Length: 332
Ligand SMILES: NC(=O)c1ccc[n+]([C@@H]2O[C@H](COP(=O)([O-])OP(=O)(O)OC[C@H]3O[C@@H](n4cnc5c(N)ncnc54)[C@H](OP(=O)(O)O)[C@@H]3O)[C@@H](O)[C@H]2O)c1
Image (cartoon, rainbow, N blue to C red; front, side, top):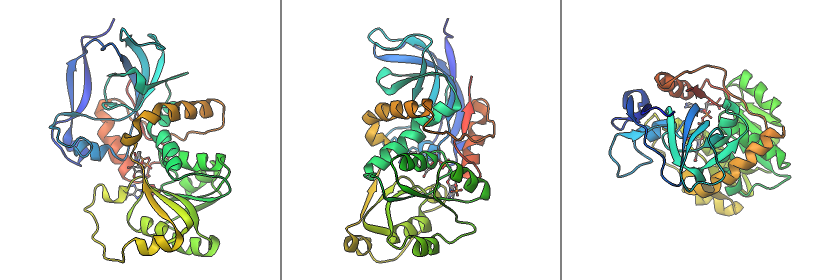
C-alpha cells in the first residue's frame, strides 16, 4: 500500500549555498504514468554539481521550486500500464532529477535493474557513467598514459579503474596520503598527492612524452598544468571545475589555447552527462556487470548521512575536499 504523500528536497530559491536553497516539502504521491515507475528510495548519491543544480544552472528558464538530487537506488513500488521488464520489488538504479526524495517517479527507460540496493551499486549510476562516457569522449585506447584528477573522488575512482581495465598507464591526483593509498589499491600506477608533490614537475620528469588522455574535473591551476602536458594527439576531457563552483571565476590573461593545442594536434573536449542521457542506461548496465563480476571496485566514503535532513551536511562535506570515494545519503 503506497502512502498518499511523501517528502522531497526542493530548492525554494536559486543559490549555490545548497543549505540556504534547500527545503523539505511534503507532496502528493500520484500514480505513475503509463511509461513510468515509482521507486521507494533507499540511497541517494551526493554530487559536486548539487550546488549548480540548486543555483538553477541546469534548468535555465525554470522558476523555483525545483527538485534536487540526481541519482538514486531503491525498490520499484508501482509500475505504469505500458512498462515492460520491471515488476514491483525489483531493485532500480537511476540518474534521475529529484533523487533527494523518499519516492521517485521516473521513466522506466531511465532505469537499470540491479541485484540489491547498496551504496556501492548506487555509485555506478551517475559517478560511474560519467567516467565511462567521459573516457569514451576522450577516445580511450590501450597502451596510453591517462591522467585522472580528483582521482579518489566519486567519479575519479571509476575513471582510474576503467582506464586501467582498458590497458593504460594511469596517473591519479589527490590531496592526502589516505586517498593516495586508496588509489594505489585501485590500480593507479603513479599517484600524485598535489599537497606534497608538484604535478608539473612530476609530469615533466617522469612523463616527458606527455599525457594522452586527461579526465579533468578540478579546474584552475590543475587544468592549466594538464593542458601544458598533453602529448601529441592528446585529448583533455573537461568533466568539471569544482574549484570554481563556490568561488568567483578566476580572471586569467594568457595566450589563447590554440598555441598549446595545434602544435601537438591535441584537443580539448568536454562531457556533460545531460547531453548523453540516452547512452546512460547502457553504460550503467555495463558498470553493474563489471562490479558484480568483481572487475570493478567501488569506494564509498565511510561518513554516514541519514535522511533528507542531512543532505546539506553531505553536500558541504563533499565540497570540503575531505571525502574519499562516493558520498552517499541513506534514505530508507
Ligand atoms: N560532466 C558531468 O556530467 C559530471 C558528472 C559528475 C561529476 N562531474 C564533475 O566531476 C567532479 C567530481 O565530482 P564528484 O561529485 O565525483 O565529487 P568528488 O570527486 O567525490 O569530490 C570532490 C573532490 O574534488 C577535489 N577537489 C579539488 N579541489 C577542490 C575544491 N576546491 N573544493 C572541493 N573539492 C576539491 C577533492 O579531492 P582531492 O583534492 O583530494 O583530489 C574532493 O574530494 C566535479 O567537478 C563534478 O562537477 C561532472
